Amino acid sequence: MKQASDPTVCLEVNSKATYLKESEVPASLKPFIKYDHSPPAQHTAQTPLIQDTPSTSNTLQMSATTNHFSVNIKGKNKDFEFTKILKKTTFAAATPLDNIKGTNQEKISILDKFFVSNEAYAGTKVSHYKGKHVLLAYFDTQESAQQICDTQIKELDSTTFTLWSRESIDQEIQHSRLSEQNRTIKAKNISLSLDYDIIRKAFECYGSVVRMNMVKRSNQFHAYIIYE
Image (cartoon, rainbow, N blue to C red; front, side):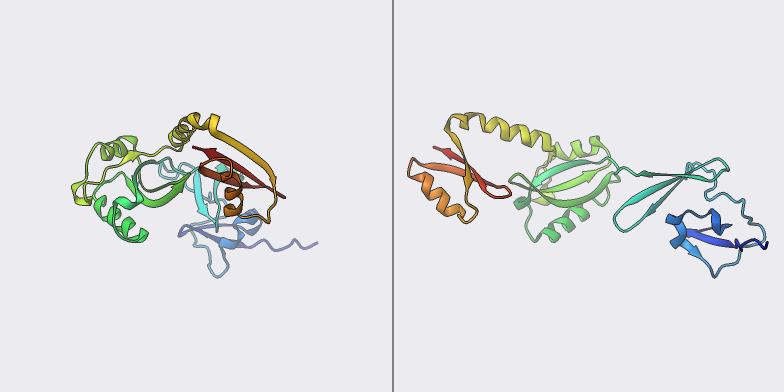
């Protein structure tokens, strides 16, 4: 019986071409096959997918649309193990969004230009978290982020930064609410047909309302009313 054809194909990943038998290419890498290439004489089907060099450390990093995968090659048996690549750890310094003038994109551009000479700088983004609206400047090291926080930046209208931590914000909010415990009530089973203003006016009949938060459930609202 004649054996089925198993041609040698060119697998191109990250601008690097490797030649393997088509049957040896895992399904997830088949989109990278280039059928219009012919393998050079010095390459054979035994060529490992990644050369053993310190820069690659036997790991190929490739990106899909939204996910990142790591392909590990174990010896010569060409076994593939797919693991999720973790995001690089960065440290953020924050400044209130209104401290710098302009649109959000203009503010990001201003910080990009200011920190361009800082080798540890990893970019800026606008962030909103539990009522905090800030610009976050990311750095590769905590020391670099801390140095920014210890300096008043005259070129940015004397803007100051603080180390960003969601945990510290949560603790701050929790601490501020300790004094509100005896002035807070929770209302449940509120009809979804009622809006914020109607609900607040109903509770204002019993005293001055400082703040009211509403949480939507599957078939009802829950309201947290804080009185003065």
